[in-house]
Image (cartoon, rainbow, N blue to C red; front, side, top):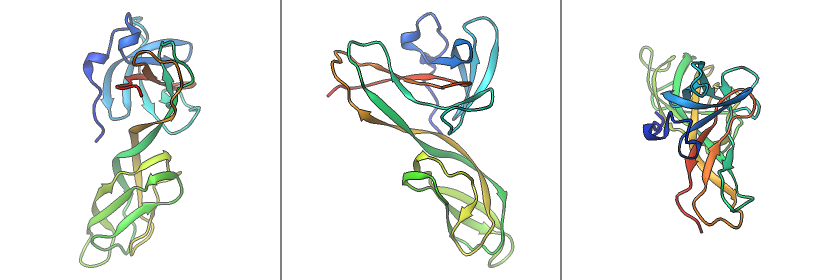
Length: 206
């Protein structure tokens, strides 16, 4: 599962430089609490309006309550720093057991852009010998900049296996270091359109 956020960074909209803020349609809110590896409760700056937001892999999510991420640098004399995030599987649910699979089959997923592809390993099948998937584990959660368009499994001895995949932020890649920074900037994980924004801290400067 994904690593939970540090609670000391949550729930203080009066001090946005030191807490995880939320960008939602029509205003700015903050993270009240974390409900899962990629789900958060957003509070509309103390107005009492709260709602659940979920991280998705779309630049501009279409549905209310969905969020995508980008990195923004907080207030600082420096400029032009840029970064992007990588996504990793934090949970997988079997939605179609398929047929013809055997113990220790390694399953992957078509398409997507990655430096390390996700791998699911079959740990048991229904009945003796080849058959539908009974149990499995995520042996490699992967490192993606664009996730696969579906959870349909590829590989192994069987076919038609499918999973519902839940993705979380696995890491941050600095794509441009920028110039002129004199102290450690904050990085804002932003949500264009409907959704959430979180803020993390840079820990060192080159």
